[in-house]
Amino acid sequence: MSNEPTPSPPRPGHRLLRTAGAAATGLAAATAALGTGAMAAYATGAPSTPVIAVGSAAIDLTPTPLKEYAVRTFGARDKAVLLDGIHLTMALLAALAGLLAARRPLAGAAVLGAFGGLGAWAALSRPGAHAADCAPSAAAGLVGAATLLLLARSWRRTSPALPGPQPEPEQEGALPGPAPAVTSRRTVLAATAATFTAGALAGTAGRILTDRRLDVTAARDAVRLPAPAVPPAPPPPPSVHPNIPGLSPFTTPNGDFYRVDTALTLPRIDPRDWALRIHGLVDRPQLITFDQLLREPLEELDHTLSCVSNEVGGPYLGTTRWLGASLPTLLRRAGVRSGADQLVGRSQDGMTIGTPLESVLDGRRALLAVAMNGEALPLAHGFPCRSVVPGFYGYTSATKWLVDLEVTTFAAFDPYWVQRGWDRTGTVRTASRIDVPAPFAKVRAGNVDIAGTAWATHRGIAAVEVRIDQGPWRQAELAFDAGPDLWRQWSYRWADAPPGAHRIEVRATDAAGAVQPEQRATPFPAGATGWHSTVVTVT
Image (cartoon, rainbow, N blue to C red; front, side):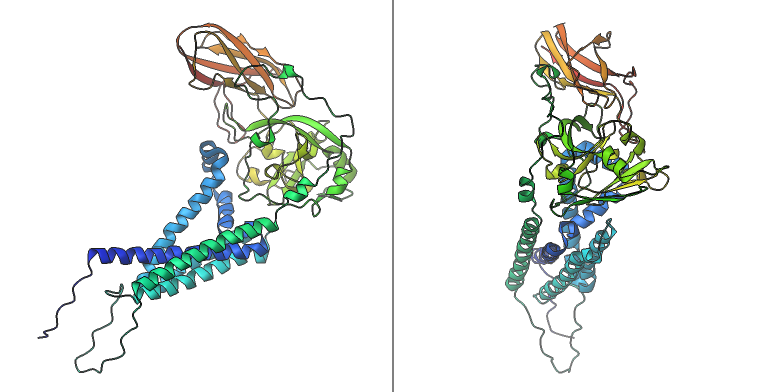
């Protein structure tokens, strides 16, 4: 019998420390991977950064109902929530990879390598991608895997009770071999922390350098907008906006204008490098530079733009004064061929948006816009050029960061949103919204002002009606009609409002005589319908 003592099992505190340390190696290796990817993206552009590439692919693959839920729930923060989710998922996978590497180093490293492979695939899946776009993710995967192998090896050399299969005890009488090198736990912790810090710094530096390289703020500020070819239109008269506190302003400030798109990073285009290609079913293809576009006779267009994702009573619409070149004029100059029925706009980030061609050429003032509210387009709204076609939701009319226009047919090509089941035409539905009183507001008994907006773009609003507690419909007072391409604001004085909880509803009638339908429908696939309502308490 052997008289040697039986080794005592690791204490719970020691086991917990080793588990936490193993997970930390995975997090540190993943941070080093992301830092490497961010630095490599300096050469290839921000969209090729591993997390951005994966996020963009996730947006493309997400089912439409889930996309609508994200827009409805998170609004303008939907992209930040997606990126946070990707980072959290990667952190969990990295921690698991670290735990796995403590026992099976190659298997743990393969997890981080696989994420790099996923990022490379995602980068190459984007429209217009180049082979170099996969380099940041490939480099991130290699660095992450190698770093995890090194850190895991160091943790396995700490003592006591190395995780995983233990070496067989030496046979009796065998010559003792050299003892395996032992690394102090403090040294490994320091190496893990240093790796994490270096990766975080590399990631921050990579993002800063990439943003600086692609910064077009100075170029945008240098744009000098020509005066319109006709005398500038006067601002809308005060009578377009009832003087009721809380009512949305008639013209939406640029900073408050809604943004709904799929771009995780804003495309940054230097106008000196920008050119618009007009091609397809045309007799004379065109290539127009930004300077040439500014030399076109520019027009102003006051227009209310809305998003098809807008729920009944939702915030995703705004009114602005656009400045741009006549899109119908440029298309006629190119010579549209017989049989063409769709105009496809392509964004620099690969988004495709299709508009019925007959509507662009039917006399409405469709523009290639270069400015909104008197200043060059903000980056978030399409600088240096976007399309604007009244009468349609943005998903079939408003291509931001526009670089390509193809005259084609509906039979030949399905744009991005049509591929995902949305209506091909995207005509704006008649809608109305109560802005005042706010939902669940408490108001004093007596005379209560009710006000809001209504819109039926390119048809116009003829009437707005309000009813309270399922009572009779009452005509609201319409503000001045600034034109069919703009929303129309309205107000109603509720006299002698009695105390208690009350439900207020609104409906609009467009200039063609069609009454806004009562039946509720979700935004998918052709825009929401139904009467907006709000509940208030009169005290």
